[in-house]
Image: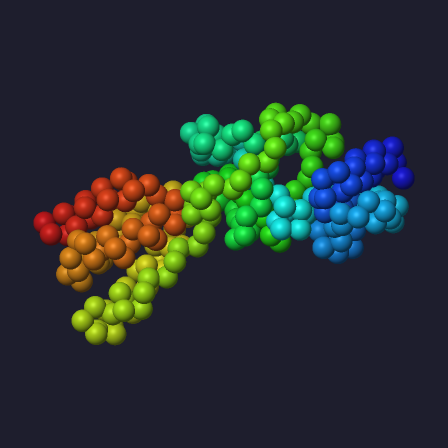
Length: 253
């Protein structure tokens, strides 16, 4: 075992013993060194030692989610959208544990909350989450800085909402006046809006509102149908109302 792997094993045992984190060895390229990946992670210190003895690796991986009690917000500084998102919202997330990553980004550690899974770019381009079913590298064990040593904070409600898939509308809301063709059309419109990606959300909301207005739905009904979905894809309330009103005005003209 290399000196780097031996040191990683020592630190991993400490994390398992002192924090209860489920850890496992990773290679220098961040891929798991053990045969079953993060599913081999354990919080039992002796089992950690055996993992490193059989599958040594220089990096410490931690399984995120309920098993370790930690979920992670991954901020990739290569994307200007991620940097801007963090600058705008960090005050509402800190203090909490924050580590510098090898690429210069941030891992923001928070107490796991049921429902937090793995997302990529759903919050903003370059802002990912790691929860149940995922893992992260514990970069502090590789010598990188801990930028905020505060205990991990609870996962906030507004961030849960930003990562959750949009709730499907009630079935009766999709069937205006009992018209099944109109209902299917509404289903398709709302499904397309719910799948909007960063950079196309406003445009798709405008398109969806125009299509609803063309079906002669009243503004209150359009807002009731589209606003929850628009919130779910990350748009703000004022922006949503303005876009829907603009679409309805254009269709009426």
